[in-house]
Image (cartoon, rainbow, N blue to C red; front, side, top):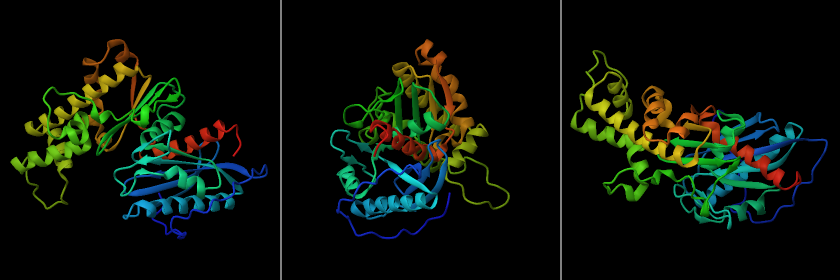
Length: 349
């Protein structure tokens, strides 16, 4: 991935409505993809076949609000310019956000970006972007990416389960993404998996509080506070490892307390996954996010553990796979959403 690039600044919150581009048969059709995360914005140009032709990445403006909007619009102009260099034409742009996109109003709720609660993102983009634009949640983008060019290519009944700092899912049934009322389908961090209600559940939901990468980090800190020498001290000084790395290594060495913690995470993951498989009966579940960077601890055991809880026929037919696109799943999904936007408009912009 290229390093951080400085973008040409545009007038803050430019509201002058731009003229729409006219199609040119002499220019190859391209789409833009913009993945807006909590700390960075990745962008890329894609061909019709799904080949990335240009990539860039910038940090998210810490001020949030209109400053982030200006970054997104600047990235659009950058993609448009790069398309011209490739003798191509930007036909549409797909953007994903770390939150909820209300399909009826176009309002975005992205709590990690200051000022983006009920933010009129789609309205601003349509005033500033000279081609069709699609705005989806990052959950939707990930399942679109993996079914287009990833681990669930050409499958129609798919769940993308992201387990990182939080937990969320992109859901596809019969080739159609499930959004729900208000785009809240897939907020699976709120699955109720414990009869005992804990205070932390009010903030994130039970599943996320117990089984996410954030949960592992929190529980690891608590365990190491009680037992700071869970691993033997090395004979030679080594770079400091974070709490999660220490716990994972201790579990591999079969240290009892660390192994119990990891198995607790595994058990909650198994229950949550079983609920999803039993409810949606998918062909494929794609597992992504930081937690699965330790597949020996959190992927391989899960393949058998979830079957104990899941509907037997659904468990037998589903295939569990790791994400093939990794951190770029959402970016590919943004490109796919852009092509789908063009198709919905009959191939015209």
